[in-house]
Length: 377
Image (cartoon, rainbow, N blue to C red):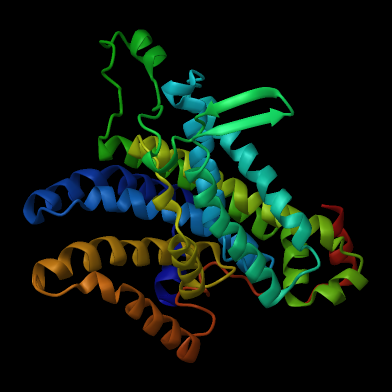
């Protein structure tokens, strides 16, 4: 792997970009050929894997960079998706544009990240994990029970039986990108660029999403705030004595991590065209944590590659290929056994994660000046 990396780095930057663009463009036609041969929904699974990569990169900020164990990360995924649902569900008559709604979802998720992060600033390790786990468990029942909201002050009824989330039935249909302006400029018939449920169209939208999240993660990695996150991950007490404002730094970690999840949740909801409380169960948080740990906590490129491989393994090999080979066996029930064995093996033989070395630079110990600069971020 190191040899491949060194060869890749020896290639000129323009050639690297050309190769990456070619791979992105030619993936859908190649996958479509494989789909016709195998009958598996491969491109849909790749879209799902890319969504999980975005989520894992957000969790990597909280867990990998800042060292804060978050077991309720799926809650921010749900907040982003349901905020998008509220903004675009026709029954509520808001019907915001997709391109406006997704950024509102980012903002709302970031605010919830700070709201949840604030009471946990003095907590560490197991106690922080318990609180975040509770938050993750609260969100699905909450959205399930927000279909009959009644607010009373004495005899005054301000709101009666207001249906905000449609309860267990979920919200459907939801808004999708509208390219009417491009159609009119290009002289195309109305609806020609309607994405619908076309996985190829969504593939390119999600690739753009991944590039945004990946670029932001790379910026954070070597920024002042990134150095401050590393300082509190290594030793919070020492970081505080070195002048790092740990309260603000930890709040920023929760906010940025949640904002990535909110953006992914909004795009995920739009791609499906519907959302249900069952999509954001506790297992989603655990699956994302497994991706980060197996791939290499703190490594942006490691989480990117590991997230793609693990999500594809789960969605294609375990969910489609194995059941076709063993039709009388419930292979899906062994899903967590595979992941558990993988975690034990990684902890024993490769504690830094399968791809933890990718893109990771050798960092010298932080000096007092670096910590102060990190705090100033």
